[in-house]
Image (cartoon, rainbow, N blue to C red; front, top):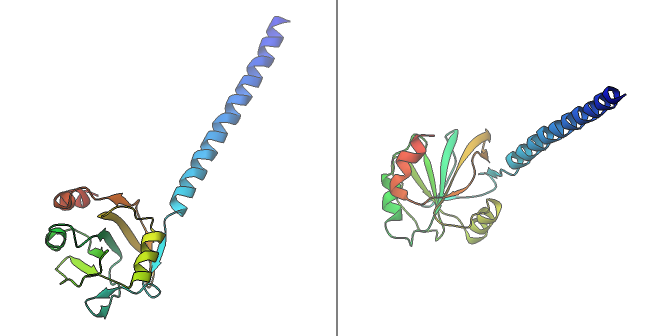
Length: 162
């Protein structure tokens, strides 16, 4: 009789362990789906950015987006000298006109557009960096988390490793 009771308890324990294991796997899957779905889209037909006085139209499949402040010392100079495998879209908080360099396109826009961009991507610090990837024609999807860029001089080393 003792063996019968022990076997029954073992079966219940095994059943509960299987249930909790499956629940943990389902929870992890749901969490990662949620985290991926919180990545945002940007449509360059709806959100107008300017290179000097021309409207920016994306031509590459992927970009590194850097949101920065032109009031920070040497930021534009460091960005224009940065050489990455991916082209850089540098969006200035203060919307100052800058000369594009070989790998960096400096963008600016109106206040409403800038505020919408900051809000859409939840940008809290400057400079911040993230990647975007082409989804359709002018529609791009965020392809990474947004991170604070601590050291512009190290940007080439860290991004080219990705």
